[in-house]
Image 1 (cartoon, rainbow over the protein chains, first blue to last red):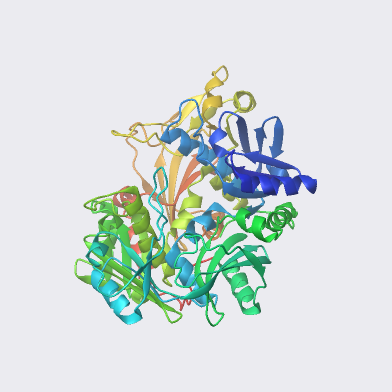
Image 2: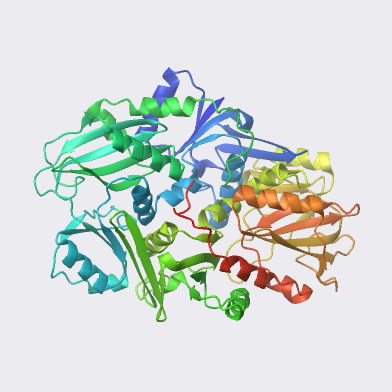
Length: 317
Length: 317
């Protein structure tokens, strides 16, 4: 039974998990979908009411019947490295590769269908509410008057992007930014804005959830620091225990979204409350592991190495 | 309680359902996501453990709490009609619009997450097998030798696209085509091929499933006709009863995929067996309704008009 890792060639986070799988003696195939067709050959066979398929990568043959789990780390676009790439070849190759993988009875970290929905930040807030996290009041709007009203009501408010920074090279930095009353919100009519009540925080929390295991790390904030990703504080990430209530909420969130892996960001306020900011289904963990020594890569490897409990049909409804 | 229809301005299939909803007196808002932001204004508010949001379209205000159902017909790209369109604006607007809609407790025809997975033809074949449809032996491969072997084994074989014809204007025609032994399959290494045992058919069958309702239509084929979409036969679509076994399989297929609407294509062979060819979650029904008089648009309207049975949380796992 073999683990399949879908990721680009350069991926140190994947390297960490690959090393743990090697130590544990778990067979593993690493594939960048960009290398299909070409370096990798695939065939899927639907006959006599049954299904079988295989992937051949660098001389390793991985049968779909022997697929233990799939880790969708940071895969390239299917057929992106083809001799004659095209949008159609990418579409056809995506159908062939993911259609075959979806047909297998295997475990996913994370299933692309679940990952895609889980990327929607407004939905994250809703699921976080339902999972009983503390969630800062938030509005997403294209109505300038609603934005003005929100700022009047909450006083200190941050604005952030819902989808991440604008694409481009070099990547643009787009820190979460404080806005106050008197801000001109007329531009909101031309593009939705996400406004959130500012949580004055004494620390950033990063919680990594893997199946039922959780690792939390804490980094003390400087007074007035808004976005923990920007500005050097000299403070490092340190392991911190997961409060029982938070653990229950994380469990509910993962169960509801169907995610096997997720990285949660919280702001810890002066009262010690962890405020849910976002949940990144593909969030990095390498920097946390390096600073805290928490064995996250090993836990990912353990999850991937589990044998599936006799699944008979591929993932559906 | 209002029905939301997401589709482009020009969409006669949507027009048919809109007319039925009007007749039934069901409130309805029609929106092209391409018109957000701009013609339509949206706001979603996450506060105090609760959620509310609204869409304002042409003076009609649709509250998320009053959302009866969403029909994802043929929506444009979010923000495509913006004064200054960009990939980032589209990403931000998709987050805002779909993130808000996902947060609502409503019924979907079809939920984009389920639709996206259901588009994968290899997975369709697998689910069709599991649903006990008759499925022609099929292979999807980038290995020329596998393609040659498949043709040797099955004799008459058709080749088709997995993702549809290549994109472009004017659209390219790409009929399903017969291939035989002696075909040069070396090109398969550069792009996956989908090969399927040819089913000599006496008719094409189109079955439209809407919730638990089904309509089947039949069009007699000319001897030797391979692709029912091409070549005039002079034969029209006629209503035909749905065999009990088929009805059960359709029910299982829809339950497993979580689709509320799907159009199934079958080939009826000389023995009367309906062979599953594909299932299009966004398939047209206008031409069938016009030729057969089957009240498909009305059935779609009935499904959309149902009140949700007290859903409390948005759709997840």
